[in-house]
Image (tube, rainbow, N blue to C red; front, top):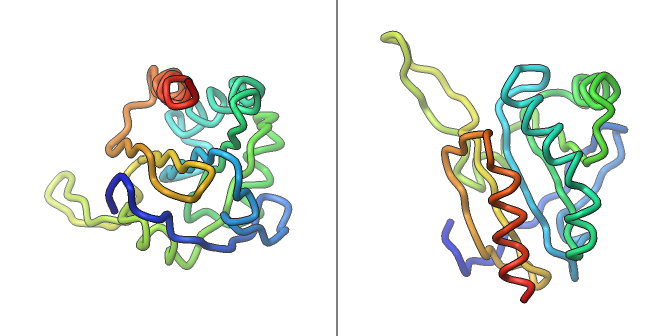
Length: 154
C-alpha cells in the first residue's frame, strides 16, 4: 500500500455492533488508525488523544476510525470505560488488517508471533491514501496527523 493508492473499502462492526463501511464516509477525510489491543497503556493513550482531538478533526471535514482485532464487546467496554468519542471497528477475522499490511509477524524474546503494527492512514475525500505512518510512536502522533491534515487542507 502506497500514497496515491485507492484505500481498500471494507465493512466492519463498530463498538455498538453496527456494520459500517469505509466508503460510508466518502467525501470526508478519513484518519484510519490500526492498533494492537484495547485497554493497554499505549493503545488507550492513542485512543484518548484522538478522542480529545475529535472536534478539531471534524472542523477539517475528517473522521477518526480505529481498527483492532478485538471483539465488538471489548471495543464497547473500552469505549465506555474511557469515554471515547471515536468509532472503533472490530476486525477479529483480520482480513482488513491484512489488506492494509498491518498484520505482521514479529519477533521478541526469541519467539515469533503475529500482531498489529500500529499504523495510521490518512485517506482523502476521494478515497485515495494521502499519508501513511507505519510503526507509530504514540507520543505526539495525533498532533502530527492533525498538522498534516491542516497542511493538506490549505
